[in-house]
Length: 356
Ligand SMILES: Nc1ncnc2c1ncn2[C@@H]1O[C@H](COP(=O)(O)OP(=O)(O)OP(=O)(O)O)[C@@H](O)[C@H]1O
Ligand SMILES: [Mg+2]
Image (cartoon, rainbow, N blue to C red; front, side, top):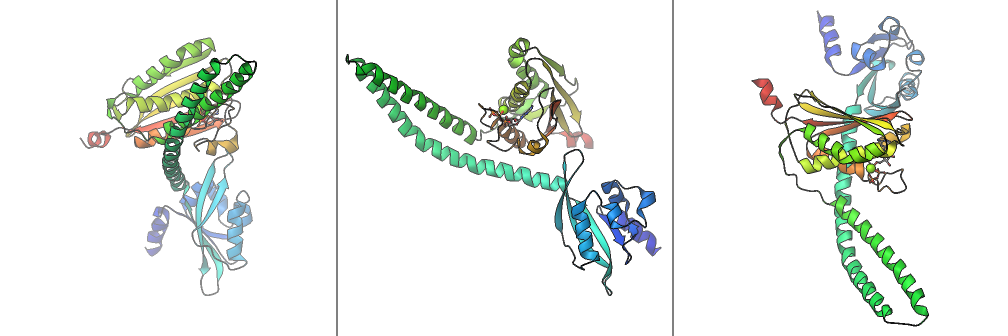
């Protein structure tokens, strides 16, 4: 009876557990870990750590530290690179199977990838908010002197106009350069401000389909010109969401603009909407250059750009808007083949509907 209970407790823990005896062979493992590690249930009993964790050197090291050096791990975070380029965050602890002789080892593994991702996203948003505030104050302070210099330069140009000597052309040329640089500074400050403002949302019931249609209409002339095929696959029974049309439009546009920039002339951009549990999902799929493996994790960082003319704010802004709506955004990319973004937004009364 007792053993029945402990078996079901071990299975229900939501953590992976494996025990090695003093000969370092597996004597117990739960189904959760078998699934998490992708092991074969038939061969796992009796296996040695080296056989099980050949692809996971970090875990193997932790195990050997316990089995051989008698050093235990407590809530140690390890990162594992999956074959598909994704990251798996594991939190592991070890204890001795036989505490008295300090032999054998029990390894407890929890997959904290989801939690880590959320922590990272929250960190990004906080960083963005802090930077936004700083940007706002700097931009505000810089704007006034910029305005004063601009006026002085204009007056100088007028004064120079009245001169007739030969130096006039040269002086006007210099002035021109100064004015061009002024405009550039003003653009930078303007972008700073654009980014730093966290606009208040004006929420109303609306359809994500309308937003997608609107954005596609905006870009369709360029698509025609560059022979990019736009395809809409909009769900007919998409639940209404509560959102700010302008802001969500901006988020979708930023992603669509990136998609265009990733494709030379010719390519496909597909927008698909579908209901998903208590959310609606918008998929945006391009056949562009894709994102190198090492960069996928960085594209939502602000100021991360690979473009000469990019500011690296497009996706940060899109992500912030989606967060403000209580949603989230995902991405997957195959270099040379294309990139897919998924935007999930909550359906406000989905829970009430479920209860009815
Ligand atoms: N669909 C995509 N295909 C390929 N790379 C992409 C795609 N979307 C984003 N990226 C990569 O992510 C980076 C960051 O994108 P983001 O929109 O934040 O900035 P940006 O486009 O470089 O500049 P900005 O949008 O501010 O003009 C891009 O520079 C690009 O390298
Ligand atoms: Mg962009």
